[in-house]
Picture 1 (cartoon, rainbow, N blue to C red):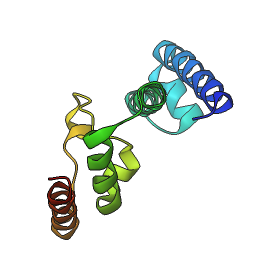
Picture 2: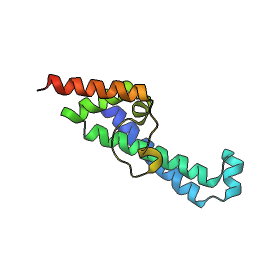
Picture 3: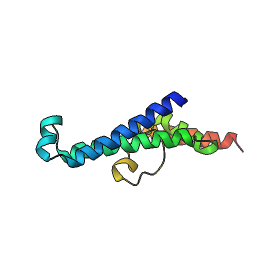
Amino acid sequence: MTKKEMKATIEKLKMLQNGKAALEQMTEADCLELFGISRAQALANTEAALAKTEQEIFRAEHPLIGIDKELYEIAAKHLITVQERGDLEARNRDSEDFIEVSVWGLEAALKDAYEAGRKNK
């Protein structure tokens, strides 16, 4: 991530934090009128965006190296959910930590990981 991209991501994080604070002050009726969704759903969406943005910043500050990088690349190559998620880190949220994957994607990822291990012996 370039310095310009990092600055923009930090600004996005601040905007989301402010948005969450504003949502917490809104009534259910306000959220339905403004966004067409419940207050709970608006907060959940904002919290998910916050978590993703915080993860982007963390990844930029702590890039993956070695086996962690290789495993992520294998998983992202074969498992679209991992690619969309952007990492293999635990987030301590069932909805984000337990993902659906196809058996053929899992098989391909495991085969690539096995072959990578064989090559590194």
